[in-house]
Image (cartoon, rainbow, N blue to C red; front, side, top):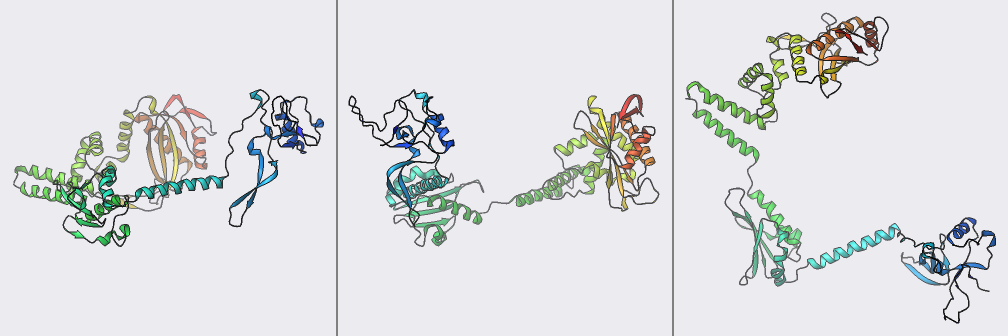
Length: 490
């Protein structure tokens, strides 16, 4: 006896009803034997009195309650060439993941309309490739120019593809079309820098500003016959002629323009030698040097330029910084200090002035700072700079330094950072570090900063120095050496 649908209200595979004449014959699928799938079916079926222990081999669910994707009606047979042959089944079967989701004779909210099933990645790639091939073929079909008359008729609608510098000329009395490139950048006067003709037989002849060129130059694009066959070849011809004719009519380079300006300056300097007081000559030489520095790869300053820069630097350092950052090419202040170190003030005094000037531009809250200690290893060597020998250790006589003890200040409430002191040393000990820290603290505090903490790594010498500052045993904070009313934290 054939199975009949067990869903309430469904007459799938029952006898034909006389009152309606409905044909209820359809495929009915038995309930799955796997308990997991069976429970999933029972959860989907809106029938409370249907339990797993009540299911028999004669009960089933008809095809009306399954999405078509779950029903296999054909065999898929793979041929040796990779294609698929479909053969109808005698009786449809369900896929392994099939579940009943459609219940027509119940309220609509009890049925679940499944979303479209994603195709296999290979199928999606094949469809995308087919679409790309179709688009390419459509482009190739529309790109063909069959006759000269079609070229003349349809060209106005495609002129935008040629570029802004190209125009075409076509008249009924001529058996060719002329394309010209007009250049007005080099001399200011418009000139035809390149052109080409398309004759009635679709052959192409190319020209530069002076003569006819060999059409074989376009064999890579038009073939051996040099005939125009596609619309896409037109912009390529225009681009090729534009680039190749630039070589024949080169635009002056920046270096050539620079040399012209320098020659003009030199002529003006020579003409101003008779100027009273030589003020004009000095100014022109200064401007010429500034112009050369503007385009030079490495700045090399003349003695006159260095002397003038040092005078401005001595008169006002803020003005010197403003001129250097805004309009003039001048040496870095550190370079000037290096050159003039043999006749400047004591380094400690000058650095104190520097720190004080930097502190004066900070707000009161920005002056709260942390003093950081760090040891930098350097290569031992002695250099002669600014009239003195540099590189000796400060904690030993006539011994090359192997490290530099750096003292840096960092504002707690702003991004301001600066170097407070640098000391070349060798074999740093606790006593020297303690004395140095106290001197630097005094220097920074006198400059206007308010040091709230001293920070360093866990080096043994640093720990011993902090122990000594704390009176023998390191403490989280001590009375500030420069102001007992405040605390200094470690």
